[in-house]
Amino acid sequence: MRTLSLLCFSILFVFALPSAATARDDGGGERRPNAGKGGVESKRRFPPLFERLTDAERAELRRLRSENPEAFKAKLRSLAAKYGRKGGAEDKEKIKKIVARIRKAKGEERKKLIQELRERVKAEFERRMKLNWENYKKAEKRLAELKRKLKLREEKKKEVVDDRVEDLIKDPALKW
Image 1 (cartoon, rainbow, N blue to C red):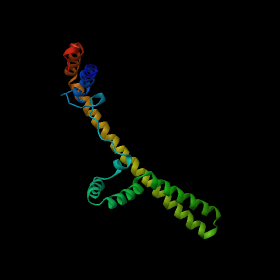
Image 2: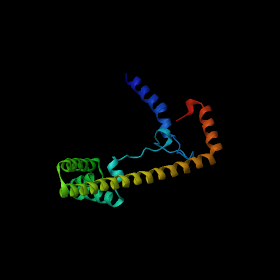
Image 3: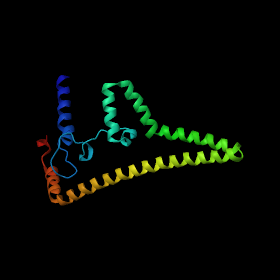
Image 4: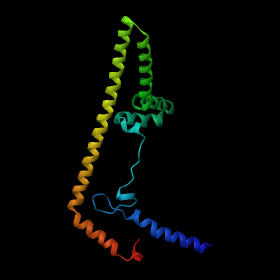
């Protein structure tokens, strides 16, 4: 039984680790240990809220998390209301209530409510536009990075192809 376990472990070690231990970076250059699927090191992903925060807000959250957990939770809640989906949902509920009041109101009160509705809709529009612009800028950065990596791979095409051919024809028993 022990021999069988050692054999299984050895097979796992020999066949499962080579792809992770010898994965390439996107530029086709040096080999990097622990690179993930597709040759790209895995990046820690944060919930969408954290992607929207400014650097100063992230720094303050890090500081509060270690110094004052209660203040950290409160700050996190306020940021979730500011950037998160809940904030948008609360605004939608307020807008629905204003619309219901407008439908019942007459005269001057109706005009005031319509003005309040216009201001809330404008604020919601501006919030969404801000998020859309932020997403656009992030997409531009990702696209520029992808373009840079593609150009690098194109420049090193011969080297990448030669390395891959060598990997394919190598004796599997000699691989790490």
